[in-house]
Length: 594
Image 1 (cartoon, rainbow, N blue to C red):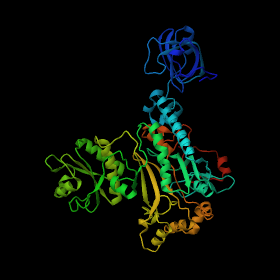
Image 2: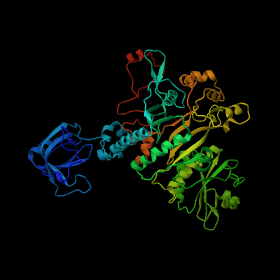
Image 3: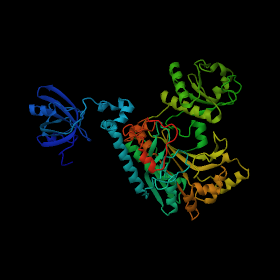
Image 4: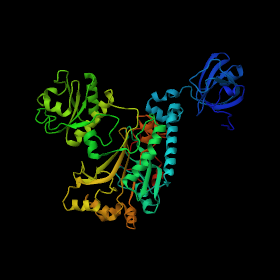
């Protein structure tokens, strides 16, 4: 690589370059002075590091008062190192400088954290000084990985005949499940744009416009709280849609696109091959206690409600009771208590447990209450001496979720039950179309209102006539899951206005409501829309899995903190009254500065 400011990068020089006159540039990572006119300086650029050896009074004077992380230009001669460093690509050589120039001086004697150990620093400091944090090669490599993955996704989608089309960022507010970020419209007082929660409607409109295959690396904006696998504010997804397509068509594309990328760029080089396993939503909840099961774990959840009926232990009497069995479990009592506490924190409910000892007796935890049920439990769960049984109880959905958390914790804690070093994909299919809302107590859409109900118009009419329970209607919707992380939701879309109106009528919204909430899509569908289907895997979550990280902030160049604040830029921030006046906005109530 030849550039005007340098002849070589700091990762380029080798023994074959000995004797050459070179010019390198970068940050002064470290300097070790070992004499009045002798020092070792490490220069770091984007590509790597090179050792520079100071051996003269002039060169020592050039660096003596220079702080670490200043940028330097070094011109000199390459020579072979007498004491080589086999851990470095440039460890066989060093540069003896004739000229050192300070290009950008670091004006601080101390740094907020040591660059190469920035990941050990407090997260607030890392985010405030993110430009320093990103100088850490370990942090920088995650961003490089992100770039490589996005590039590979683009190439693969293009190869599959998809066109990359960008959709609007300023659009209309849409009831898609999360809070919108609103943008006041200066030319239209009292009205607002919204940042898109997803390009959902636009990509469906592209299908009605005659485009056959669309994709984009789409920015999405949702005013949601942060968690380990979700960044507040904005995120990116591989958004795609296909006209005249079925669920199987969508599956075929991603099953071809993703495994090679995961195998090439992932921390683990093994990824599921096509076809991915398909699991019905109800089966996933019943067997794994989750609609995003980690299939690297070989444990399952079993229903023991009948076996423990009338056992006399009040917290499980009359409840749905699930069990997770680990045979030959070697967990200590201390480890069990810690694991149960973690499950309670994560699930919000207390789990229980017992063991079958070497004498075939139930011991520990709630064993004394289950003694009368021993034979039934032993037979149903195929218990052998040394078996540990985690127990979850509650209403059906709650018991399933507690058992799912138990399964994950036990799989990770008990040796031999989790094949961790691979990427295990699966599809979750056959989601319920409707559910009873926790707050409203009335029928609501369970997930995506744009999904086509399985059975089409006929099944909706039967529900309307009372012939079937709306809760028994399923949607042609699917999730892509990898290692217990939901990468994506997708669906075969409801492209028929008549079916769309009938689906909304079941949740007490009429045709006029549909026209008002989704005017462009409803009208477009009235002009003849093709059957279409799509999906949108999250890029951030994908890269997080590939990098082996547990926090999504580690793979985002400039992430917000957990409170949706950019502490580096000072956002969100107050604005001048003049700006508010232009937008016809008045601040009311108690507005406190951070």
